[in-house]
Amino acid sequence: MESFAYSPLPHKIIFGRGSTRQLPQCLRELGFRRPLVLSTPYQIDQARQITEILKSHVDDTSIFSEATMHTPLGITEKALRFCQDKGSDVLISIGGGSTTGLGKAISFRKDLYHIAIPTTYAGSEVTPILGETVDRIKTTQTNISILPKTVIYDVDLTLTLPLPMSLTSIINALAHGVEALYAPNVNPIVSLMAIEGVRALARGAVQLLDDPDSIPARSTCQYGAWLCGTCLGSVGMSLHHKLCHTLGGSFNLPHAETHTIVLPHALAYNAPKVPKAMEALASAFPTSNGDALHGLNSLLNMLGVPRSLESIGFQEADIDKAADIAVSKSYPNPRDIDRDLIREVIRRAWAGEDAR
Ligand code: NAD
Image (cartoon, rainbow, N blue to C red):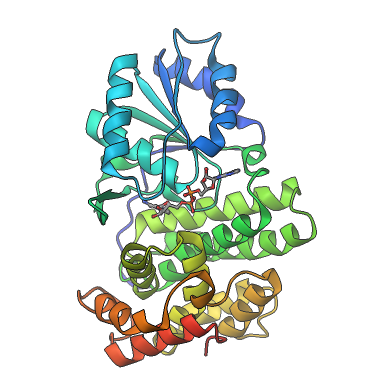
């Protein structure tokens, strides 16, 4: 057995259908009486469902529904003023990674307790990582006090996520598990979570194709998203996440779709150096025939998710620039980073070729 260090994340997870109805009891136990519910404009109805559940149990509830992609500082400052005016004593974010991000940004600055209710599979709710945008530049920081203290996974709230968004969000989650398997600081617990999470996500995604409203399938996906998100929050990520950060941050490509397209190519690049991870992944993909890359390619083809960066607006002329940015800072990766090979990874992802 190799040496390792392991430190579990200090938070409480409540998982199960209808679990948002436990919110009044949660707030009572913690002694909070003035919740501020956060959402995007598109999810204001779900925010209202939360205030409805809470209204007869607290002194006052308010909603701030202007969460938006990339957590711009201007919106955070507006939300901070709103929070101050309302005298809120606890934050409840309901939504995907963007809304969770706003919750983290406020909670970190005001030292407010944050309850996250995720409605996608992105996993931000279980990480101590916060990405924020100032003057169009996105910076990321990690601090344990950024981690939401309670997370409520209620499958009912994921039913409204359209199938195409669900599928790319699932692959976004799966990517955290894949890179955790070869993280420099991986440990046995994280490896177990990663492979179990990848298996659950792959199985759930295929089931969702048949029935996008299937509660068991969506619940399996949420379970996988929790496990893989926990991996993201626990160990360091490598080439795949670096490439997606570059493409999202510098070329404004959509988060989940970018992860979906890049993942097989980043995995193919690292494959020769991570035989144990490849073996584990081969066992987790439904149609791998013992070959993890084949399994991932066929899963993505079966799901009908976007396969080329070109299809989501990335220009061929930007491949060199993206390669330069992606290799400009060093980071841990199982295989040495070679600029020309990375350019080829991006080119293949741009063209939508099967990864090899
Ligand atoms: P998102 O939060 O941007 O959501 C996309 C859209 O889908 C939004 O309009 C949202 O309101 C809507 N939506 C979400 N759930 C819905 C539901 N159940 N029904 C209907 N509509 C719904 O997307 P995302 O992919 O969850 O998050 C992406 C953002 O999160 C990125 O900015 C990314 O950088 C960040 N992120 C951060 C971390 C971290 O650890 N810090 C991890 C993952 C993602």
